[in-house]
Amino acid sequence: MSFLDDLKNINPKVPGSWSLPIKLGAMVVLLVSVVGAGAWFDWQDEWDRLTVIREEENKLKDSFKEKKKQAINLDLIKKQLLETQQSFGALLKQLPTKSEMASLLTDINQAGLGRGLLFDLFKPSPEVVTGEFTEQPIAIKVSGSYDDLGKFASDISMMPRIVTLNSISISPVANGQLNMDAIAKTYRYLDEAELSAQKKPAGVKK
Image 1 (spheres, rainbow, N blue to C red):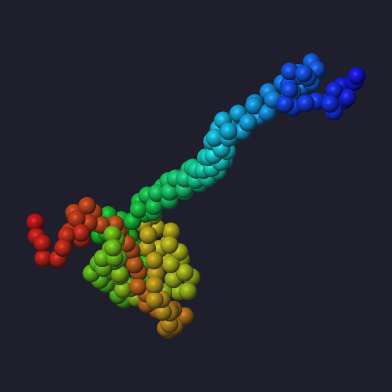
Image 2 (cartoon, rainbow, N blue to C red):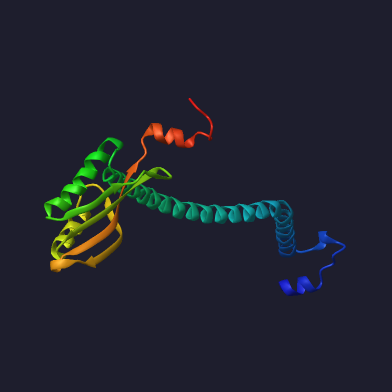
């Protein structure tokens, strides 16, 4: 009798009468079923936990990439800030101190005289405080040739301290000479005492 014949004639109520191959097959099926059921019920929580861990891992990877990108940008920002601070420091060095203002006014006057210009007016106005800086306007009126006026303006722009010419007005006079009216402006950074005074509320005295 073949295995198939044994399988067809099997009596499920009397397992003791089953042939050896059928018994072995039944045991294998039963074992697989028990292991499969155990795996399903026992490992399902572990599988869910593994899924959660994998999702968390992906989130951490994304977070790491974002923070790495921010770190790279932060380094760039720090570098730009350092360059800005260095540029600002170099700019501050071009501003005269309070004690240097008098000599700077003399230098502006000498620049005109050195070009053969005649000063009809050289009048410094009171300083104007703008934030952490002061602006020193100087009303000037000079006369001379076109070339000399141009060279004077160039000399002003080449000074080691920042000086600008504003509100320039040029008009002709006799003998090919020109008059130039302008407002020269120079700037300085407030010293620590002046900055402290600026920050104090009005009416507060030392």
